Length: 329
Image (cartoon, rainbow, N blue to C red; front, top):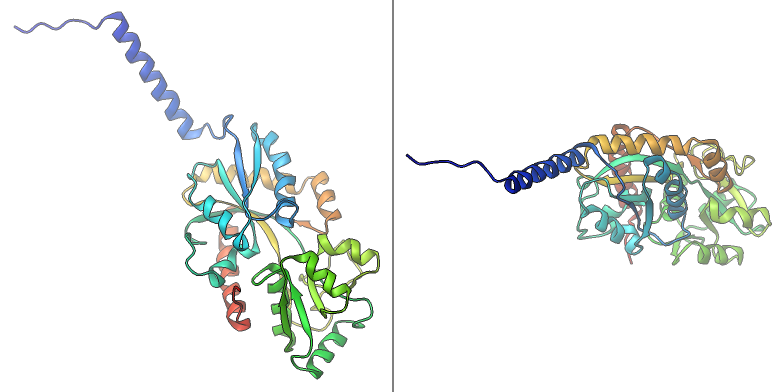
């Protein structure tokens, strides 16, 4: 009869250690996120951009809230599509996230051959802040919005408006306004906001929907004139400036926002924890005060609601792109 022999003590210890390692590994996989592993926020724009500023404000508070470090990784290029592609291909484990703007929903309609699907390859965690654009001109150019619209209609195609690039938030805001006002004017895209504002101040560009964070100092110094804000409600940074709707252009409101995204299939408990922590950060008195100085406001919602918002806003973006025939140079 075949005999069996008990394991040696060394064999038993080896097996026990392996089982313990598997148990710990399984526990980590099931619910130990984030542990001590750093979390990376991919920002697809340059340092100092509005999206980057919001990301850094959040990262500063999110790290301590989660008990780990949160790093901002700037990956600019191609209107934010390069950084988005990096985040889309990252493991869906909660350690690589994307901080993008409303432009994320415009890019599918103006960039051909994207390596990712905006709706299928990401899940929305939460919007974080809204950053109003403000309709600016040189101080002596127009009396108000009605004056701008009247002069544009009197001279179809004779006036021009700037943007920080085709498909940018400044461009989308301008097109929503132009289509709602029913005016024909020439679009002049620039490399960025500073170049556009310089040309507006010089009077060579008639108007520009500038990011509040960039335009506010120039408005206060009298170098630019604020005719209206592009949002549905007035901005606390410029309380005396009407909205474009209040100024007589119904249907011209445009919301520019910055939000947090995760790769699709990121575990729902991770998404919910991120949403809860970011929401608390955004409404904290300290961050609200810091945002207000930038002309920005907290803007959060639950993940499920955000994903519905994303789908709706993506469809609206497609309509504007088609109506305005927006193309990438």
